[in-house]
Length: 259
Image 1 (cartoon, rainbow, N blue to C red):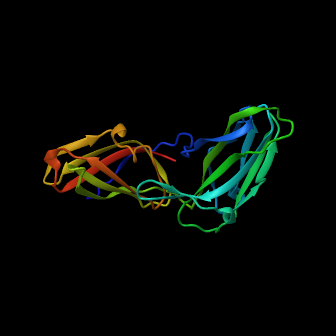
Image 2: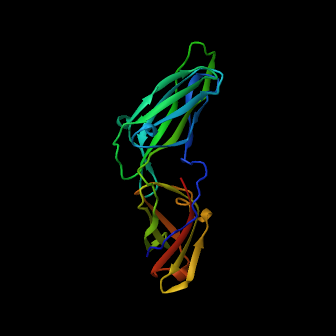
Image 3: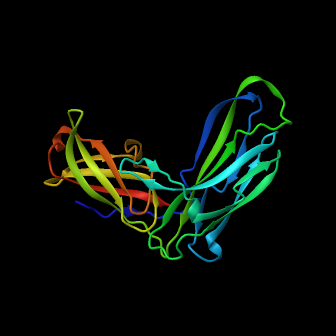
């Protein structure tokens, strides 16, 4: 049974679920390489001057570094796993590769070259990664571990009137690990993503609304605080007390919507 969600609409600074990943590589140089890449999230229009956006890379280390910037599609599976595929045919990125001296700042321009008319928000990843290039000026000192950095940011191509629409598509009593549980399918049928901040949820018996169990954001891993892309489904399994086992269930939830 679906219930309307209660939405306290807020728009703080963008959260792109940006990830900073350290990859350990065995190299011969000792210095720690590092850089900054901003912003972490950007909204683009499918046409016109707003179809272009500029990102900034800065070498914050004391040695030259080589960087590469690429674009990837972004899809969400039912279990929340993200699937990425090369999206070089959808964007112009300039420059794609660069060498930055210590303290140097470089502007990277991306431009959408996909369809000019879209009905649903298109989600992408912009990935800026440090390349394992050894420069002659670098002083080497035996075998050491360097940390190569990678930034994963979010890029969205917006349709007209972007709007999320989140509901519980289904709720089913199940048995998991020999214990009663509920399988919920969340659906964003809107044409734009949203982040489910401060999500809370109450499950009730259909034949007795006073027989309930409530969940706080901390008790909703895998869905609370998650980014639900336009058109995406998300499966969540939650434990149930014995008095709700095997009964028809309904659910209500509320969250703070964040772009």
